[in-house]
Structure formats: C-alpha cells, structure tokens
Length: 86
Image (cartoon, rainbow, N blue to C red; front, side, top):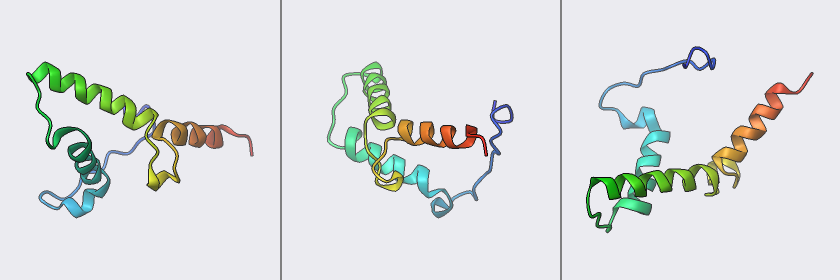
C-alpha cells in the first residue's frame, strides 16, 4: 500500500526515540489527553475511547506544528497543491 501511495517506508534506529519525534510526541499527547488519570471498564471501552480520540485528533484538533490546521485540512491542502497544474 505504501508503494501504491508513493510513500517511502523508513526505519528508525532502535532504542532511539529522538529519531522518531513525531510519533513520540503523538504518544505523549495521547497519554495527556486520554490515558493519564482515566479508568476504563474493559479493553473494549479503551478501544472505543481511542477510536473516538483519533477521529478528534485528525479531524477537529488544531495542531501547532501545522499552523493551527487539523491534519485532515492540512492533508487536503497538500493534495490540492500537488494536483494543481503548473
């Protein structure tokens, strides 16, 4: 699927979180926003909360690193730019 989308899969060095900062920052945000201090009734409850948070995170939550845009809006703008005729 990555090849079909033109995405190059890159591996990071093991045990070196500094080389994977974006994912590490996401885990921190997820912990702060959803996990820390929460109690889940069961694994299904946690899975549902996680799913709902991912929808929020990608579609509604403004991201400072994206200039206040949501990832959905940012991706749509990038797609529009890449498809624009030169």
